[in-house]
Length: 224
Ligand code: DC
Image 1 (cartoon, protein in one colour):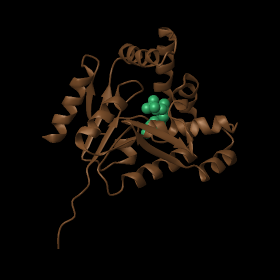
Image 2: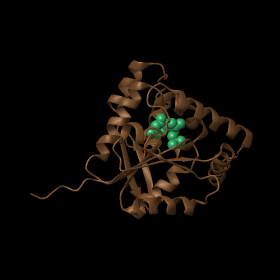
Image 3: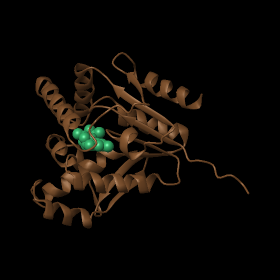
């Protein structure tokens, strides 16, 4: 009988703006595995709740929304697009308004249960690299590689500002730092699967590393 090869699972967690998503995207491509941006999924639920005017504390409303939720990732011209119930929300989920509200939605146990279940279903049987807050602790506790990417608050704000400016969004640096610090606090202090470094994850401070250096560092660790 042939032994079945265990699929490759890589978990990258860390606070907002630590560069997880951009690093994860490139790394997944180099490794030839599926990339799943779990933050985008929480953002999409937030977008839908706001679009349908479902209050975040209306649990019946949230349940209804989750019961019919269909999230689909599609690759087009090298860009991963996210469709929420058939609507392309790729850009809509990146607005400051969604960023300001996503922590409130991602702390709802019902939402987390559904997202974690969907993420584990996607991961089943394929080589996958996921980034988020609870991947190493909750979604993929048996992942072969777990990384916790961090960077100083100032550096994370600088990177986020650059990203927003490239999209033509005006940035107030002070406000951005405050927003990120607040999101960190909310993400770390919620009761259900908070932002936390898994005990067996390797912490990498990227404050003084370039994007390419971070990618290379993780790639070498995995390939070794
Ligand atoms: O990575 P991001 O900034 O796009 O994530 C948006 C929010 O989603 C973040 O504030 C916390 C939440 N999130 C989460 O709770 N668990 C995850 N696995 C991924 C994101």
